[in-house]
Image (cartoon, rainbow, N blue to C red; front, side, top):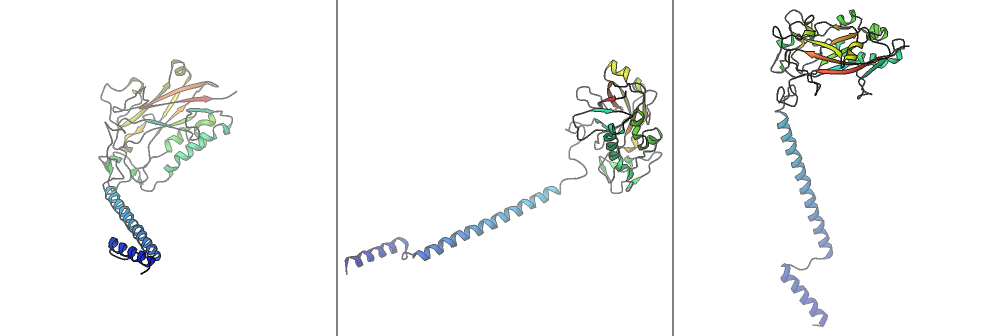
Length: 304
């Protein structure tokens, strides 16, 4: 046996002792490497498919516990609270930080954005499907219990006729063309909330000639003594405010949010008037610091 043959014999025997088999060829090693990597890839594909399916199943089970019509926590001592806020229209979305309503009765383009905003806001009230005409003792409370409407619920239809008769309709550009703008006042939607009546002797003095049981009454004044003098005569439509028959609120098809209007009949020319409007019922609190239960805005009638 030559020296080279002896070296090859020793190497093969060492390999056999170490691995229990002969040393694989380069081709065999590459095939084994590819096969092992393919096994790993297939394992992770099935692993992540299983993981995704498990997550989807858990999510589906969780969603079954959620009631889309009623939040789990609402009312007093929750972040939602039980004291409604007050909103107003026209509020321009492209000027979200501004509360100034500036117009010139002789120039329709100066108030076109406001009337367009109100028109869009009122569009939903022309859709009367799944609503009902409520009169007498009829109200949303017939179908809403604990903040949830039953399957037969139809919201009370909110009529706009009274506003049109008071000169606060589209035909007068909601009063802007006559210099007597009509501002919409409404409450935030709070699940399960409905107004409570004042007890005898508790009605605020500024409401005594207008308040009626079962209503949310509004009162607007200037934010200062000077503004109080400038604000002039104010008309509330309806004078009692929002009828409580439209409460409580609950998620239901075609719910029509009620509102009242306040008409400013004698605004001064070229003077900014800062206005504060509050909503009143026995269970509504006006908080100056948080602005809860009230809203402020400014009016400017520009005219030479």
